[in-house]
Image 1: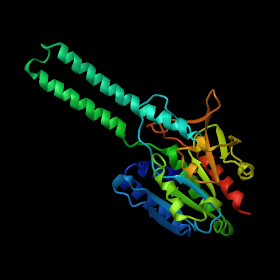
Image 2 (image 1 turned 90 degrees about the horizontal axis):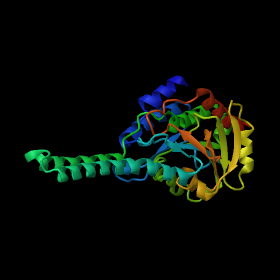
Image 3 (image 1 turned 90 degrees about the vertical axis):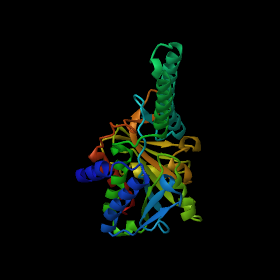
Image 4 (image 1 turned 45 degrees about the vertical axis):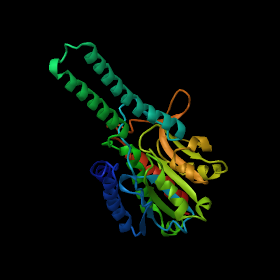
Length: 316
């Protein structure tokens, strides 16, 4: 497992641009084909970096259950103590926009202050004063644009390399009978508009709402493992939870559409979300250090325990 973390967490760890995502998908695809799984790439035919590319593993048409995660990685946020809330999409969205908008506004404000200083002090800069004003405006604009557009995050072990490796390990553990009932999908654009998840509505137009989706998100680092479910799926959550033998405390939680909004699971009528993190003072689960250069750790024991939980739930 350690060598896979290095390979897909560092060598193929940045999956932000289309080229980076395609390189990763070609590499991870080989892992599944070596195990004997049929695979298929699907894309939404958009241009350049807006294109979403999904990897289907196994027969998603006949499978009753699809275990999935997103393979793309997020942009870096320049915000101290940034928190991601995997079970509250709206809160995560607000946190993300705050972390990207405020630094951009600060850069713009600093530029405006310096321009005001130049205008208020005609003697400063001498004959080069117009040049300094122009340079400040340009630098402020470029910095604000760069911050808002985003830089590719360098390390992405927990979000979401750990989940990808848990899926790979589950694929290894499933017996032949279970492989007929379970398929896997690596979605694209899980860190942005979720267009990769939405592509399933086209791929499975008549059976999408009949399948059980198990979405893994940020499973590699935390003290509290959660199996969250939509209404009427408590029994499915309990079946997973009873097969977990890892060191974390495991809990079951019900989510509504408002909490699932802006997450890939929102687009599936029958969806479970498996995630790992810490509780804040209000009892909301959050994941720390993702979207930053500090996302360098995932607990291998936890990844393997989650994979075993998934495999044991279907190897009947």
